Image 1 (cartoon, rainbow, N blue to C red):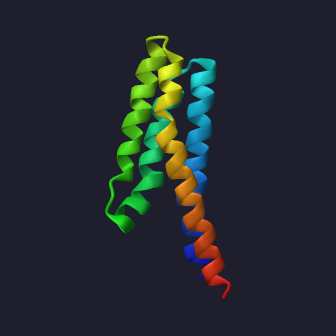
Image 2: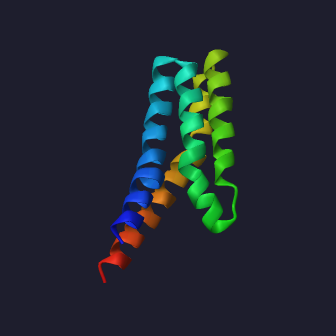
Length: 106
């Protein structure tokens, strides 16, 4: 029971949120390498949810790589827009984690 909660929390929810924060820092400081690292981290964070639901959430990392290119070309507004789907996936993963935790306490 606790191992399932830890897997959901540390590999799903927390990894997606941390990837989102690293991406935002990379755009804010204009560090494309931060977006590339966050994109690689997003693959592992969303792979679990992709396998469970059959929807390719791991492709969200391509948007972060595109954001890195936009930061490199000095167009940070496009990079911010490309983070919106990652934000939605992170919220979705947060909801799944909280629902899973509440189910396990019953």
